[in-house]
Image (cartoon, rainbow over all chains, first blue to last red; front, side, top):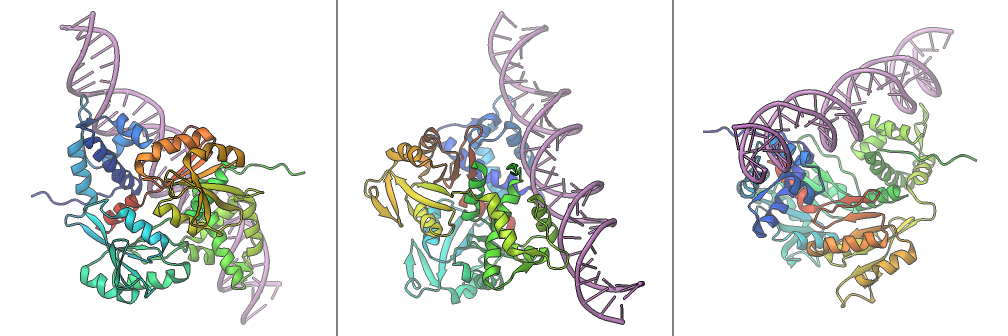
Length: 209
Length: 209
DNA sequence: TGAGTGTTGATATTCAATTCACAATATAAG
DNA sequence: CTTATATTGTGAATTGAATATCAACACTCA
């Protein structure tokens, strides 16, 4: 039996793998069965070398004449980035952004789904909002433990960010996607992805100057 | 008269400068006037060296005893990343995400504002949506030229992405913030920032495995 | 058959970003 | 005055990511 060696992939490569897969799904729907590195590169706005390098890192080999077999490649990417049994995600902060993300995401990935939301607004709690049940934030800990949730999306107000993050960490969350404008600090071993719209726009504004 | 030397700053530094400034605003409100690199680093979840290096790059000097003067630092960052007269931004695609971003962003920055939105849904066009006027996408080109818009936020459906991007480029847009799940290619000299929620979540899912 | 073309896979190189290590300096305390 | 401590500023080293280069291979066509 092959031992499940854990691949230590660069973060950027993982992001690209996720995107390769999405594009490859489309190609499959268009009836394509094989693809060359330069084709995939073009669709992703990358160089062919970059694509080949990524695929080399995950140990996938193509053929000189036919390129890569899309079906196999998709399967391998899935094997690497998906959890076998899927992962449930919660979202905290059912404001505009929270609702947008929830609706946007619903049904996009079968191994990954936002299963429940939390908010402190009693108007919203106890009901279905944007297609998923919304509970009061006081119930986060219980829910996370019971359902073994590992990932949370954070879309609360700046003021609430630190407190909610603490709750999530206390509850045992292992990864946080922080969409607030407040930078977070997390302990060793907890994974954090942050993204801030204002920062992106300010960067663009600087670049076009 | 000092010649306006254009600082070639690393992209990552620009992003951090934007965030330093936001945090420093808060510190000012709390009555703080000076700050040390290690304090700023802690708030940003960075190392002190990183902070000092960034400030070195923009040519700001602190004092060994008092650290950095917040007011001066904020002013300098503004000088570097803001346009003198401010910049107007448009948003294309008034769906859930578009509305969320618009409301979220409104009034956040005085030098930067989303002034108008565009959509192809006639229900929305010609009205005020999420606080800003929403026009039909056929009017993009005229608007961009007349108002000298340089930056656009793209929140349309995957299917529409390429066409709308082409319209924006034709109209003379210089920077695009792409929130769709479709990777874009832009010509030399046009700035592109892409961000995809699904990718972030898949990356997190991989990391917590 | 054999030259020509286009592809992959991999090593080497370059480039960008971060971190290390420490000199220089200011302040406080003895 | 001298020592101890805490800070900044920065050259050098390191790490991480992207790119260049090319051998090996498979197919095509003359």
